Image (cartoon, rainbow, N blue to C red; front, side, top):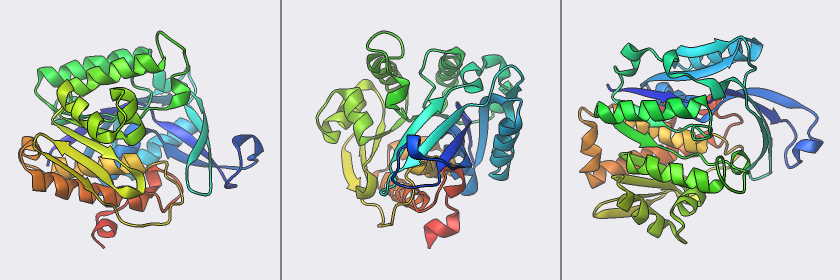
Length: 321
């Protein structure tokens, strides 16, 4: 089985206990472990995969909690650093009746992930590199590390998966660094270097500047990626590669919390990839791709039936049921 490496934010999601109210009106919150990279690795590892995480948390109770939660999900946290001079990153989240999010983000230690934090023996033992951090492209020390790791993966012929995880509130500048234009430019570069790109409908059209997911997917292929996966909520996922395109349906569920759906999807896809003797087989086999996406759709849907992203990741038994 191939091993998967990811780096990026590891954070506390404070989930409002009252549904369909704004954050301003929430008076009670439940603490949950979160962050796109650890969520994806939790999905991978809960299914039986092997995942390594690089991140930074505060040297505090929240940081200890997050490392413990990752360990419970069998994520290797030996490259998660406890930073004594910074607080653990936090997000405050409220949910609508349909499971959609309203949130405030307070960034802390995760902005300071350093290349020197990495154990190169463990990193180079991984065949698949997942770039899925929501904060990964924001100007910071972490962004510099993100790019160094990308170059390392390219140089050593690793299989690269990219998930942009766009958040409007992170890219508020009208122009320049940390603007939407900056995100688009950086994402296009990431897409050009990736084997697989997974994006939402909104992300795909934002990055491509196209008016449909079909056009967006073709644009991504023209940039250089080999496979495009566009998640379409309850409709399933649109899978595209050269000579093949199909909207692959998901299962019907009652949505409680959509926070971890995309991470569950890509984590399940990473698991299926890691089971291949040769990861490049997915680039050649249309039916294999369809099988992987159908499996990933089910993982994302099941995650939506529970509150909290990381703890909502399904087991193999649940997906097979």
